[in-house]
Length: 213
Image (cartoon, rainbow, N blue to C red):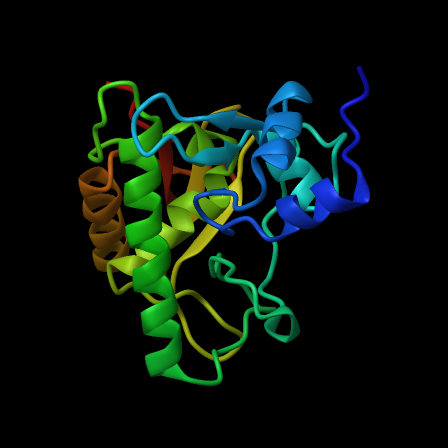
């Protein structure tokens, strides 16, 4: 069976919570998305429906893109959709610091709820499947939610980048103190960070992976 959704089903997918993937729709729409492998029904009450990794990829407009190849994306202020700030020269400051703080707090609480709903034991102290499929955004959200500031063209801060390893991200910071603080934050958020040095540039960075147990 084709996994391409109908127009009505795509509207349901596009309206999903951007962090948790929680869906709202008619029972027929949700059941059809489950049959197509784009959603799943949580086994515990209230039995909400959530996007699968395939559903997330369709929501993001790249159904064929492997999760491991995800590249860090910069926020798109005009869309009104929450996006983790991964840091970099193209990063811009949010129009409202207070508004951004509310968005980040809400996204982090939503992510903790997704952990509770999707980890087999209901644990919230370690990353869930969504985070392992969206490594850069998940790590960046953990850092920003803890108060770290991303790098911009005019301000030093953290940067989160992909790595050749399938379940690891690289985290850069402006100095050793900031790098150590990022490591502490990620460890508390359920990640396993280790500090390394790039052989060519001698730049110190963190290699962080989601903890499984």
